[in-house]
Length: 111
View 1 (cartoon, rainbow, N blue to C red):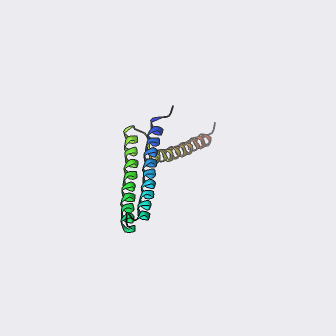
View 2 (view 1 turned 120 degrees about the vertical axis):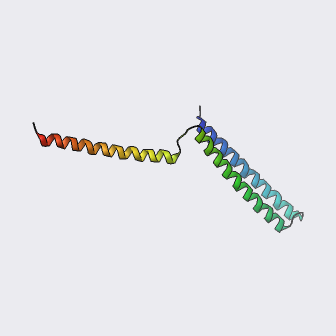
View 3 (view 1 turned 30 degrees about the vertical axis):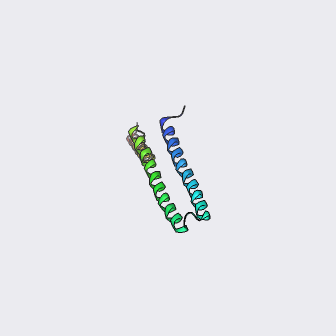
């Protein structure tokens, strides 16, 4: 079974894919209307620009919504994970330094 994170991501990708598909179909329709003379090239170009702007905003909204949902679910973000990973590596290095220091102190004192 897939986890909630995977489901949310797939839903977001599905929505983005749907938005892209609609965009392609609308572009085809506009080209067809232009060819038939029902729509001027300028009108078609303006409409496409508006559509692309709207789709870009929608994609950004979807991405923000996915991020919001993941935060609500208390999942760690990639950035948080990487930060924690660096912190663990740093702590490991400190532990090894302390071990080496303790070992050398023990050897200095002798039997």
